[in-house]
Image 1 (cartoon, protein in one colour):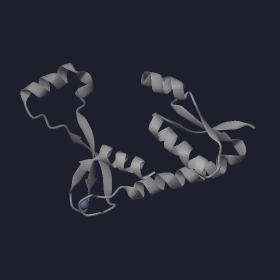
Image 2 (cartoon, protein in one colour):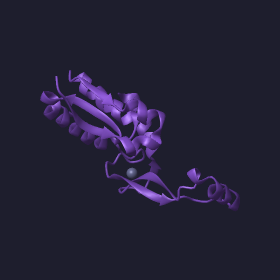
Image 3 (cartoon, rainbow, N blue to C red):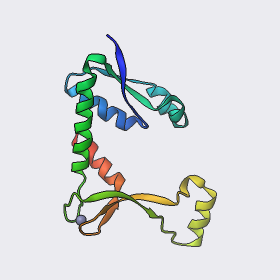
Length: 141
Ligand SMILES: [Zn+2]
């Protein structure tokens, strides 16, 4: 059986969600370079992410399933305040509460990300964390 590259993922969780969806539909798949990426995320770009491989004859159907999954995930994101689907991932400047945290941010570069991603509701203006939503999804499935 010949396997071809269907999609590649920058992180382990996304790759496994996709693989799980295909398995439910009886499509065999496997993850290439999974170990490399998980052990050393810096290598992710070098190896091109975690590669989701499927049999050539399943590729078309698998791709359709993954497209549907992506749409469904977008639909699932709704504002916790008003329930609107008019939400989009936006970047907001990180609020620096005081000089101390600004200095810490300066020295610890990994925490000095100038922006953080939030989901913004265009109906009521409510903003909420993207991470919270990710967790909700994994509990559902
Ligand atoms: Zn809202």
